[in-house]
Length: 365
Ligand SMILES: Cc1ncc(COP(=O)(O)O)c(C=O)c1O
Image 1 (cartoon, protein in one colour):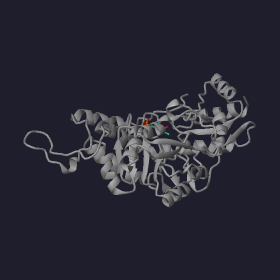
Image 2 (image 1 turned 30 degrees about the vertical axis):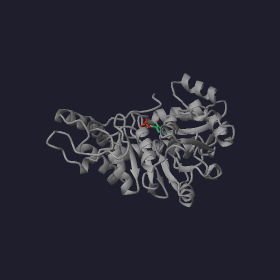
Image 3 (image 1 turned 90 degrees about the horizontal axis):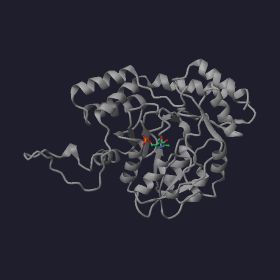
Image 4 (image 1 turned 135 degrees about the vertical axis):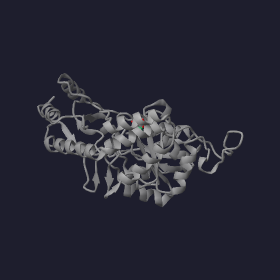
């Protein structure tokens, strides 16, 4: 049994083969088709496809104009990518506390971390469960902050009936190998403002405006680069894989949600185990099934003996020297960090796998 699952659908293989045979593998028609499909099938607003979630996060900060001297508020319950992109822009990461009941950034703590230098908030939807976006966006609106949602775990999640990827000025998804939909590696930056998406398209390709620059007789486009750009575009081979994998994503998401619901029903009263809190106004994308357990190492060892992988996936990131070292004033984060662990929740699991995981957990550790 695997902890993560890389899903490659037969359609993805077919489209990838066609793309390879066509001789055109760089960014082209299929990237556009993939972006259109993300909008039409999942309701994402102006998704700009790029070569990783990390690139999308960095691009969002660049397009938002976050730079040296600015502070960005984020949770430490994240992946290092979320913090590193802030450093890449010369800005300062400021860690807010999380709610230990769900692992997501606390709006109360965000308010406490605001300074005159605050420019942006980067919430992370831990495990695929949406943060309190109404609260976060109302703080942002009041102070004129930019919101960049790190939705690397949350493709297919909804908040008050609306898809994650349609709520805030910027939302980032990851299409890395072990995510819900993979392009091999890849990501998308969704923008509710069309001018941001236009900027992102130009800046994902060195800052060259391909739509408005003409090839000259000399063989190169005539262009001027007004701002720094990057080599962050997705290519057609990745987009072919993504399009194929997107086709069966709705059914695979439902399967994850069914497994999540079964775990919640069966693990609700296990001594030494606490389920995370879910609010009725959000749906969970279940990239992870994170729980809080006592004696975590014993829990992991017991499951491992029975061939079941369990993992924290990511511990808090603030302890890294690059981020200034462990923050001592995040009690919710400390509590969550000491007890969180996840069990497999993906569509590669059989019903027997799910029941075996339940049995091994309910029988104690
Ligand atoms: C919370 C979070 N943000 C960002 C990323 C980065 O995504 P990518 O690997 O596509 O660059 C990850 C990757 O796992 C992640 O877990």
